[in-house]
Length: 177
Ligand code: HEM
Ligand code: HEM
Image (cartoon, rainbow, N blue to C red; front, side):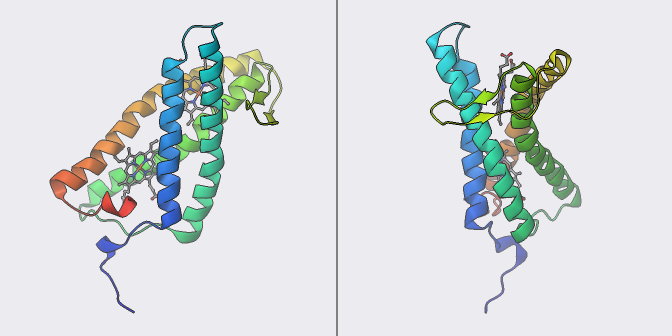
């Protein structure tokens, strides 16, 4: 069997599916919040439902993604530069944490507000904890802070990928496609 240098290794098909599927759902969750409109409107209800669906699916896919990652691993680093490799690992770790923590905070925010999370159209209600106004404020503020912070982290990650492709002209982006 042929052997390949580390830099020509690719992500597996399921890893690629999870990466871009979760990316699209996160983008949809952000979009839904941006366009939801004022309280009391049909638009607000519709887009909030889209937000809950997209965010909950992120969490479900992230569990499968993590299991797959632990089972199959990832291709070897491309960067020859130790500092860049280290930074990219920190950003990847932060992104993995984000796709678990952000949806969980959303669910906990709604539950501690005294409601189950209802996914419209599916006969599914999620209740992890009971009402707790003090905790609700914490989960709300954390969800808002992390949501706003990760616009930047995701942007940095995307810029790095595009920079690898256009400036360093290596395989980083291609092996995730
Ligand atoms: C990756 C998934 C998610 C992302 C990226 C995300 C992001 C955001 C962002 C950016 C906001 C606006 C914060 C602000 O006011 O500036 C928000 C609000 C909100 N999110 Fe999420 N969210 C996600 C998942 C969820 C989930 C799973 C739920 C619940 C099932 C949820 C429930 C809410 C609620 C209720 C609000 C409105 C809070 C308010 O207006 O007071 N989110 N989310
Ligand atoms: C919600 C948005 C995103 C999240 C949560 C995310 C998350 C991640 C994570 C956790 C990894 C590490 C994979 C692993 O080692 O198992 C990764 C790798 C990667 N991502 Fe993203 N990503 C997002 C958006 C993007 C975008 C927009 C691009 C491109 C423009 C991109 C390009 C890449 C590439 C090329 C890799 C492979 C890096 C390498 O081989 O070292 N990602 N992403």
